Amino acid sequence: MSTDILNISEAAALIKAGQLSPVELTEMCLSRIKAYEPELHAFVTVTEDRARADARKAEAEIKALEAAIARMTEDARALEDKLAEAHARRRSLATRYRGADDLPIRPQHR
Image 1 (tube, rainbow, N blue to C red):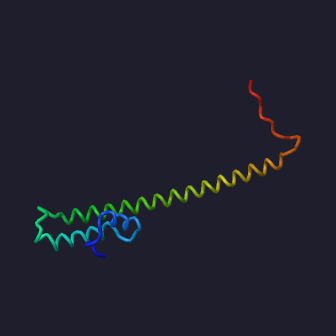
Image 2: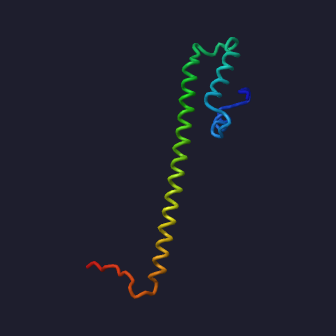
Image 3: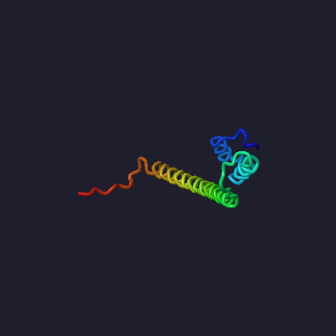
């Protein structure tokens, strides 16, 4: 993949889609800096090690968020299952008591 045609919105979309990692993007940018800096003189100091460390940190945070989302999705599904079981139980009890003389009567509070 070339950064010649990659803008920040495109990079973000590729990272979100899992087609590009922050580390890969950082390496692509550092390669461009090395290629063009002798002509452009745009940087006083290029902190490659820091850029790589920050990219690795961002990648780890993305993976942690993905794992947390997966756990929350799993928990939500489990809660939906429990709720469905509770509704089924309620329907079963309502069907059993419907029309019966021994209906549980709610106490009246005065």
